[in-house]
Length: 296
Image 1 (cartoon, rainbow, N blue to C red):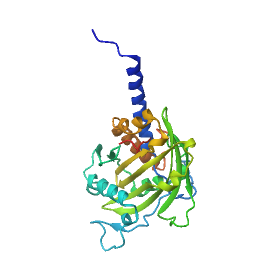
Image 2 (image 1 turned 180 degrees about the vertical axis):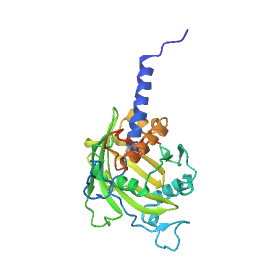
Image 3 (image 1 turned 45 degrees about the vertical axis):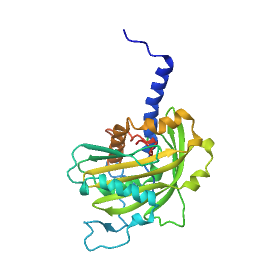
Image 4 (image 1 turned 120 degrees about the vertical axis):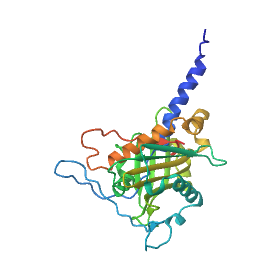
């Protein structure tokens, strides 16, 4: 005869499950970027994708005669380390990808693990995918759980390849999370169109915690090759801004469902990048996540 589970254990189990889902919501917050320009429509009424050119140099074995400074040198050391690990885990130039691949890795001293998914999406155009990733102000109302997402003027950054943004998301049943960050278009590296984001710690720290838990660490990247999409992230909230259960939910609890959440986010962004992505058919937006933003 089985022993009935105590109410407290049932509540904790339910809370952790909800936490995992929410944690991932933070992690999958696609990082905003410069406005792609006013959207138009084709004769059929489908939304027109604003294709963003790669302003950065082409780096790696596919660079040919092109030369230039590596844009990864312009990001903080921990972001460069993250990007290097991401590219190490990514299939060479997006080749040989069938279905969905998921991997994750830890880092000494960090409460969450980095998560990465790579998926075959036949017919996907890398420039169109990155155009959507960089469309910061287009996330609200299209990306699940995004309460607000706004680009901010920043005279110190060239608008053609980077943007500062503020974002606030709702993690269902757990917490609201907010941050100030920078999204960069890194051009083409090792056969992938790459965009990455990283946290502006001082600016995020200046936000009012009453409006949501502030991110303590937040770095991520989108990769796109012909017919292939990759998504990777690592993050967690400030410990002082959340209670014990929220902290557990957004760190350790975010591991369990990371793989399906990352895949669903890839599916959503890929769908949005197609001209007909929001016209009829399946227009369900991708899940956003706050711990990776944090779904490790």
